[in-house]
Length: 185
Image 1: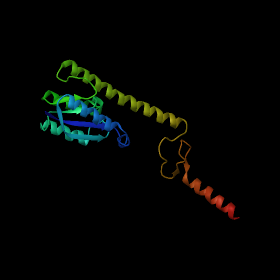
Image 2: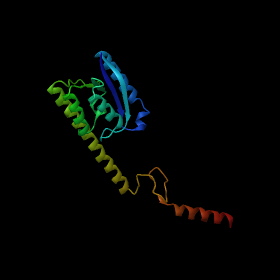
Image 3: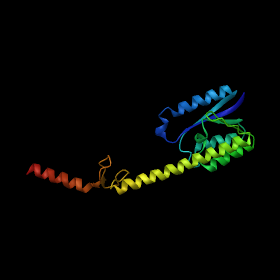
Image 4: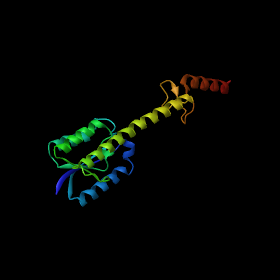
């Protein structure tokens, strides 16, 4: 049996509390069993793949370069990367003989067509992140135009929550002092 790594990922710690990681893992296990692959180590990350620098991904890539395993199984391409730099690193591994498998996508990385399809899927995953950033920025500006500060209250302001207008905390203290004065007069 060929020895491979299993890599699963979600973008945030909050997403890590859901079922996605477990579902990815189960799909990879089923894929490995069908293809005679033995998973010798799991890499589970709760960090965005939009930018470089994921520690476990980088650790796994180093182990693959050192030929500690024949390859890796990802659930899908976008679980492995959503940026071109990481994809270039993965592509170098493929060129040096490492195997890249996807439990959810039927891609033969040993063919030109498989590699081209994978390249296009990475382009789509990268564009998805760009679009997400644009939409988030548009939403923030929209909230600001409505007079709603879309973040936590700055120091010195009271956060009333639910998109309500914030006001300086000294106003609250003045109101509390006035109410106290009125009740005791």
